[in-house]
Picture (cartoon, rainbow, N blue to C red):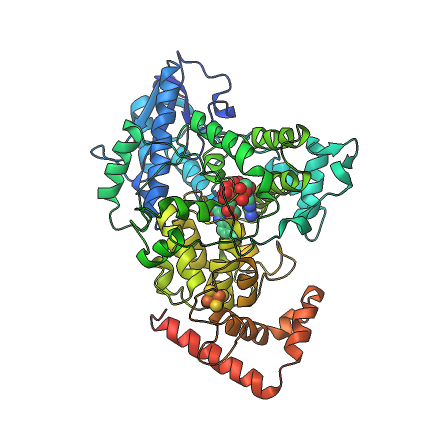
Length: 547
Ligand code: FAD
Ligand code: SF4
């Protein structure tokens, strides 16, 4: 800072929309007399990708509540609302303008999660001639440097080894140097399906009545983002830290005990599920069936990803609460380990993959997939019941659980051969928890195998029979998951065999695909030709806008 231009503010602390942690490193040494916080709602962050309206509302409402929380500390918070006249519409543009008015000596920020945003901040700092101090994000248990060191030692970094290392390093579910119960992983106990009676009574997930701030945001989003996908009806996501803690307690007490066992199961109950199916899209989850639809959507899952990604919750407290539930006899080791693995393992691991491999990771397309995303992904209007239900639920709530994302919507795009960048655009748009650092590796790596096996040891491919085994979606579908060709052929099953045929040479090099390829070997030349023809016809139909 030159002496001709004294700063009005010493540190201008930039807080991004997904950095709503009052204990973050950004505030270390914060001096209310000399420092200020800067936050801005910018249209570009909601429109640079298409976005579910509930996702936009969640971010804006949580940001406004966080602003009020900091102001209640007596801190100066410079905040730009979206509706304010002259909003520049981009993060860099708004920040540059704020710097002009406040004349800070330097900018401080915690490592942004998203690669693009960090570059934008660097550019804004350079343009204004200010130093940008980027502080470590203490929200995560691992650091960027630790992951880089870990990854550098190995050709491939599998999640399982990373996870064990995290358990050891942070002393989670450990018995001295050994894993509690003797096993690192109870995955095999996490694959039950519901019986014909369905999931039975599961307590409703905790929901939060919108207060005046949230109602204001919902009204504005409904008008300003009217053309965006997704419903705002029944919006009840936690938008403050207090609410997020209630949501955590609710999950630990009511759903964690059965989380592990039914982690992979899917269900559509009568009444609620069918109503959703018939209504489809915005506004469908109203009326008498709403409770049932909600139960089928969340089942025994935590519904905590959005609160975690906004940093309203700290992963340490979430993991500690789950471990406590085990030690106090409220939940089995299988359930608690299954849950901890998602947070301490997968969540930290995908962040590491993202940070380590961006920006080139976003462009990967190892299988050369070039089909467009079928239009029904935005409407749910398809005769495939599984996709109709999962997409309908997604548009209604901005939520689907992991297996619905991986083994229904993701699987279909993979089998069809959709361009990974388009699949990425869809996942980033439709879920309230979507932030690029977690969404991209899950989509490009785990779901689409577009990174060529960096994350997943083999493509997650299956026929319609997997969906039949793990859900009741196939009951009442016009298709038959057991048939690959013919009038009632299930498109998943047709495209599964077609996928194996299209990528046979590549997959032969992967020993983990041996069993699936052995089964493929049983198809004679005529059958192979028939499957190929049906696969081509399906692709042509979806390209032409069919469902
Ligand atoms: P639970 O099933 O209760 O799991 C507990 C927590 O573990 C979650 O809240 C989440 O924080 C974490 N977690 C679970 N699985 C993963 C995973 N694979 N990667 C990282 N963290 C995980 N998660 C997001 O938070 N944002 C995304 O944008 C996102 N996009 C995804 C895209 C695809 C294609 C797939 C297959 C998965 C994606 N996931 C994403 C991971 C996972 O599906 C969601 O975190 C989970 O469904 C959220 O619901 P929940 O909070 O009820 O999770
Ligand atoms: Fe989905 Fe096929 Fe089952 Fe229909 S039969 S619900 S398309 S898996």
